[in-house]
Image 1: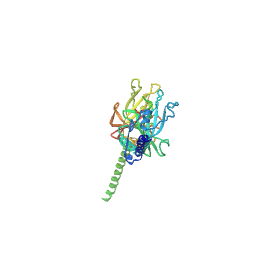
Image 2: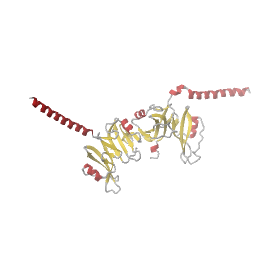
Image 3: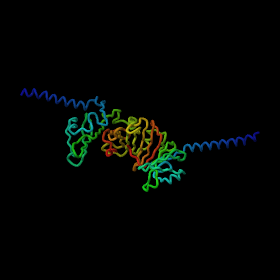
Length: 192
Length: 183
């Protein structure tokens, strides 16, 4: 009995410590000043091309797919937590392999910013100035209210200058960024 | 003596007024803007046949289509301004039509007053409802310029576009195309 307690107690302590660390990461006010870099290849350690298994390991969760490998649909979006923040993950699969991998990611968290400091809260002109020599696609339209709150909405897509198929995008409402993400550039998705 | 002064002042005032009138007319001429739209510039319109353009320009255009392409560019003067017209063969291949044009003239402006000399940000803000491609131009593909860029404003329904070519954040030329695809 005593010997099993000797093994169990440290284990319980270890689990409790790890849980409290996770909670701290979520609530720590220092986290609010910490920005995670968004690039054409991912958000911090969350990288496009990661397989479902790699994502599960990074996020510490099991991903239950409802479409890929189950029905005809080759893409699906799942909600997850990353660094304690809400993120939407766009998974895709080629029809041959039926292996889901990360194609895009979106967040409304202000903790994710580009290397130029653009993120939730940035202004339209700030984006245009920051990427003066890049490729920007400005689309102003009525957005799906599930993506952005009501108001004059637009999406600014920043395509990679030397490979316009890769892009980051900023969702703006009334000229302020309310969401940031990355995905294959929609305009050039089907172009060689 | 007084009798002489009154008519002299009158004549002087008349001369002054006529001079002022001439000056104001000159200013008006300088201020004349030619409307740039998705359909053309002033009376030069996309889709216009070569013969109709020749009537407007009062000249004969020499159309020498590039091998296989069926297209040619022609430098012309329109109302004293330098224009380049882009011509293409029509389906019958016997007549050409305008598929695009460009000008460096500051007298050609959009309805919102954007033209040569306008700021890049002014161009972007002038078309709130249109999709816009903003990119640095290619020096030699795939190397993009650090000073030259373009703002391509797409038509809301069709593939027409107005392109504002920019150097150091100022518009230097305006181009219209009946078909535009960003690359």
